[in-house]
Image 1 (tube, rainbow, N blue to C red):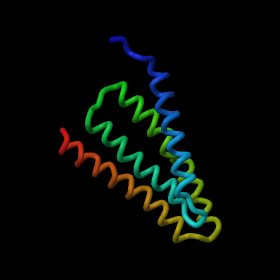
Image 2: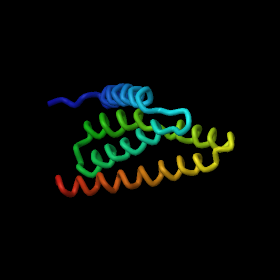
Image 3: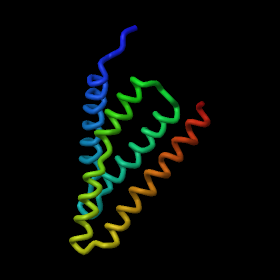
Length: 120
């Protein structure tokens, strides 16, 4: 069985992740709080954790981890949205967003580890 080109694998995963990101943004983003970005960052952390802890192989890691999770999650939007909240005087929401992304992502990875232990 021949190996697929890593660039094609990552690109395919990236397209899937970007489309999923767009879908989430359209469905649950709100003007008052960036819940869409928080959601994709936490879900993406969980999926990346599962891919990593389950050792699914290099090609699946490229497809799901690097490609899909890489384009689904977004540090730049998180940073911008947190800064935007802060500069408009929404200090509590900015802090909640920052803490929510950090704690949520870490808890999602811990959950993925637990699920991997049960499945592995």
